[in-house]
Image 1: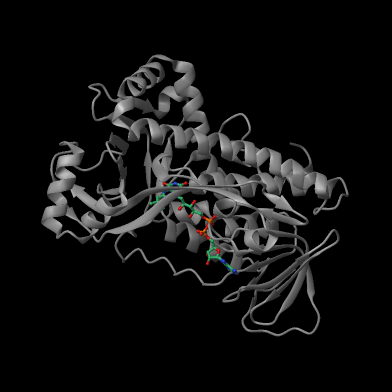
Image 2 (image 1 turned 180 degrees about the vertical axis):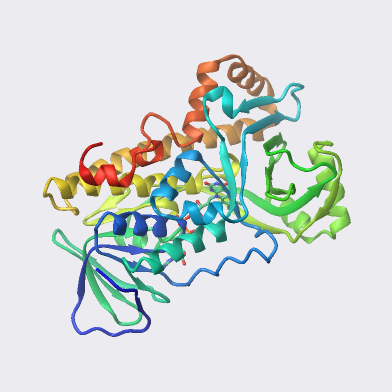
Amino acid sequence: MTGRRLHRQSLQPGARHYDVIIIGAGMVGATLASLLARGGFSIALVEAMEPRPYDHNIDVGLRVSAVSPGSAAVLDQAGAWKIISEQRHRPYRRMQVEDGAELEPLLFDAPAFNLERLGTIIENDLVQSSLWRVVTSAGLVDIFCPDQLDQLNCDGKLSRVSLTSGTPISADLLVAADGAASPVRRAMGIRQDHWVYNQCGLVTVVAKQRPNPGVAWQRFLPGGPLAFLPLADGRSSIVWTRPTAQAEQLLDMDNSDFITELDHASMGWLGKVESCGPRAVFPLSMRLSECYVSKRVVLMGDAAHVVHPLAGQGVNLGLADAAALTELLIHTRLAGGDIGDARLLRNYDRWRRSESELMSYGIHTLRSLFNADALTPLRRIGLAAVRRSWTLKDMFLQQAAGLGANAPKMATGTALKTLLQGND
Ligand SMILES: Cc1cc2nc3c(=O)[nH]c(=O)nc-3n(C[C@H](O)[C@H](O)[C@H](O)COP(=O)(O)OP(=O)(O)OC[C@H]3O[C@@H](n4cnc5c(N)ncnc54)[C@H](O)[C@@H]3O)c2cc1C
């Protein structure tokens, strides 16, 4: 497929057919679109709202992500990493975890685990707009934006979609990367377990007396963790988890009262808070879909699973979903198979659901352990065990870095080109 095709309010007679239709061009859907298009698949990408172009003259956005080395490798194969790395970003090589009650912090240093970095802090807007640039400029993807899913009809043979613009399209496979509220998941009647934590994550950007030296710092406090993530200019992006009512109070405070509260909670790490930007809060929950596939439909990213942000894993899991599906579709195509085949979809479901459930329940348990004061002895035993055991630390870190035993090949360095040659 050649030439950039931006379908705005176009009404086609008859349905155009694609290999894959992707609903949602957030960080996950846009990554999948680019990977598959670069792999030779014909792609329709449907997005309700065009991402804002990234502007480095505007101050750091409130939404940032800790992107793992595995995810960076996937974004590289999607063609976005080069664009991202030329803009504002900050790698970090140390992670420091503290329990308010423990004296000694738990340290994870990248070189000790043969890693160049533990992750990179990047603004979500930068990731999304870099991917958008790739998918719109390469001319490989048909983009329907602004447009939305109106009707969906998936049977054993085809996925048929009609968009709110009136455009009908069809594909061998439909991917829902349409976020936590996923209209596709609802339309397919896929059930979810949903834990509402009655907690919010308050986010803002702060400058301390001393610049952040490239450390992702997290202190577990009663009521929820407080995390400082390093930014390119020495400031930190914070995520402060609080019970909902307290988070709203913190949101409404004037700046000097908020800074006093934050100084108290961060207990002098890097000195006092010198300044603080605008604040926002996000309600936190965990959602797990009972199944990630249906007839000729695949769920990925937040449409399939939502995790508490305390381990910074939400988008990392979604990018691994995108890489995993790409790998399975390429294998199937090389073998001359049908990319909507039920067995292939079951493989995706087993692979990605076991990975996400492992991570989600791990984070859920951590959250519960650190949230309840009554469990302090158990928490101490847990922290002491991790501190002493190299194996536990290594396992934890490799998983968080997106390089665990079941990571997709692209995350661990296999090039898309190699997958396409069937030489992996
Ligand atoms: C406070 C906080 C901090 C976080 N920090 C981290 C972190 O450090 N690291 C990390 O890995 N994760 C983090 N996360 C999680 C991460 O932000 C999400 O997992 C990620 O944004 C999900 O991306 P997505 O592409 O799956 O979904 P979304 O970003 O929700 O994208 C869905 C897209 O689908 C579109 N869409 C929806 N419905 C339709 C429709 N009907 N038709 C067309 N388009 C549609 C939407 O417009 C949107 O563009 C954090 C989350 C929070 C709340």
